[in-house]
Image (cartoon, rainbow, N blue to C red; front, side, top):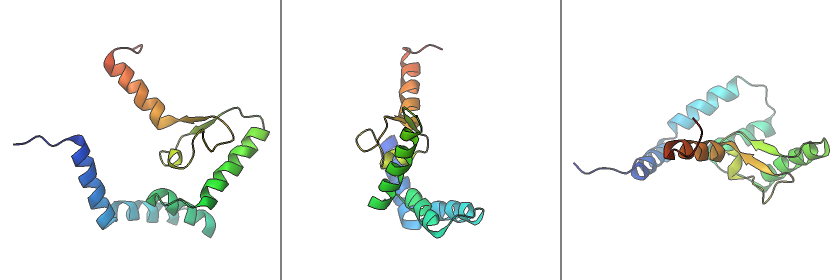
Length: 117
C-alpha cells in the first residue's frame, strides 16, 4: 500500500470541507447563536471562519492595533490562527507575535533536540 503524505491528507480534507462545509457551518452557527454580536461583527466572524477577508476587516484590525499602540502596547499577539492570514508586521502598526508560528518553531526545536526540555 502506498504511503500517503500529510500534505495529500490535508488537501483531501480541505477539499471535502470546501465542498460540504458541514464542519465549519456547524461550528459557526453554534458559536454565533450563543453571542449578542452586531450584524457587522457577525459578518466579520464569518469572514474569519471562511477565510474571505475584506479591506474593511484589515482596516478594523489596524485601527484596534493602532489604539493599543497609543495606549502603550509595544507588540500584539496574533493568538487566533486566522488573524495571521490578514495581519503581519508588514501591515500592523505594532510588531506582531504569531502564536501558531511561535509554537510550531518551539515544537520543531524540541523535536530536533535543540530546545530545553
